[in-house]
Image (spheres, rainbow, N blue to C red):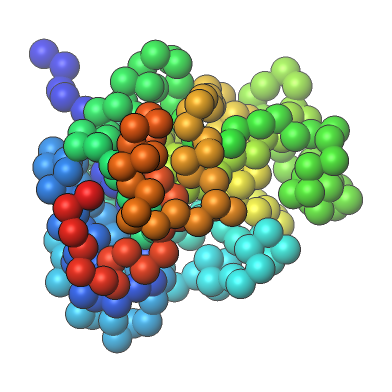
Length: 254
């Protein structure tokens, strides 16, 4: 008999220990059958006080950027830090979430698993677009460097190695095989995570698919508040992002 899927939800946060514990309790209450792994980018002192079952400290300057696109923020250090825990848990899939992503329905990961099956996909994410040969700002910022395009040629198993994809890192959903393969990479230059993650997965032979119809619910430029939860839920949102400060306050039932 095939083993049931086990999702490891990686929650990337820098918030206080109290906020982290509230966040983990909320996610666990809405989906008790998944494992939660906190990827902590705050201070070492706060990390020592988290008091959660599974956590790793991510001491990676490529994560700790301020102007994320220009400084080419990377999640490779996050992937590499959490991978031993994911293997130990025996997870079959990985959901990469940021602290300001709020689930609006119980069983979110079951919905994401169903989406992967329907799309016959290894990776699914929001705002997935092909951007090579376009004026997309992230692409043009990288394309002047010959090492950027030659890197994809070096690792690609595809017939056309010039494909570059863009995708939000937040809310992306992965098979463990795809997650492990991308985590193993060590590019010779820093590549912004929204390009690195989907493009690397594609060139390594994995099928990357969009989460059609739900991108606006995760759009980082559209700030959300708890007052928006019900209206977004009625519009078909599974989760929303970003909701700032939610875990730092007393969390009511959403």
